[in-house]
Length: 344
Image 1 (cartoon, helix red, strand yellow):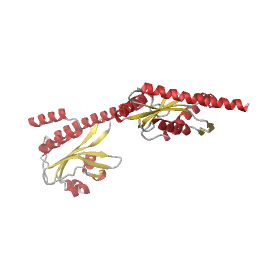
Image 2 (spheres, rainbow, N blue to C red):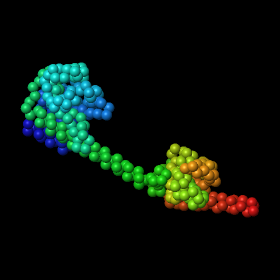
Image 3 (cartoon, rainbow, N blue to C red):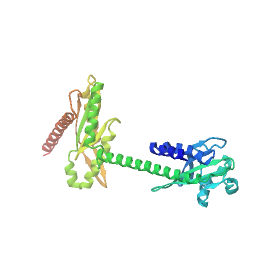
Image 4 (cartoon, rainbow, N blue to C red):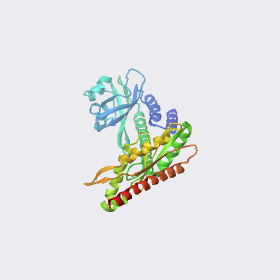
């Protein structure tokens, strides 16, 4: 018993995962009970299944690891319902269990594995194909092991919850709440990576700045809710016009930015920049139907530059794209003014 306590102490202190803890325990449980198969199960009450998670088989009886059986047919369910943890006459007690009959189980002992927060996790069991007596200290050891396994499961569940919460917080910190697009911070981080990659690969980087012309008028005329829907709709249209590797981000207000890998320096980067600008601009033009409000939108001002990553920082690249966008915006305003003048 003293050596068992030492072995248990080593297993508990060194275990990092449920498997790290359970497998040594199954070996110890085989020694304590004298039964030829020891195994840990999980129970899915919604699906009505019991699954053999880990198993140790040393003689004739083999409990297959990975086996799934209907929960209603298991010895574990019958044992829990009757409050019976041990029998050396499975056929006499529960002869209606097909799973026990097929596996050839004659002697059986089990206890539930529970967690504080999630309830029933599974069972810890030992079994033999022959009738075997159970040592007096076997049941307390079985229950102790089940409690320790339940605590390890709780720790792993807590860790998974913390990981999920961390991932959700990271996603919130990286995402624009309205459009679901990456935000400015995420954009700049990605642009810096693109510039570093472009410098290594000898390729330009395309940076596009998009400003939604007339957005203030849309807000003033139709209200802020329609304004928000407009920005979300434009985010969808712009995204649909891009390559899968490009990133579209909401830079702030009614401004969006696109970044992506450009062609090599000797492959007409400016031509690629013009093509992207045309594609982005065209995607924003046309009729919009937002919450029963329909109107024609004349399109956004788009400026795209192909920058040399060897000589351009992320901040400089954004400034150049912004400058290019304002050149387009001034040109569009001039054309609109000329039309107004000629019409009068």
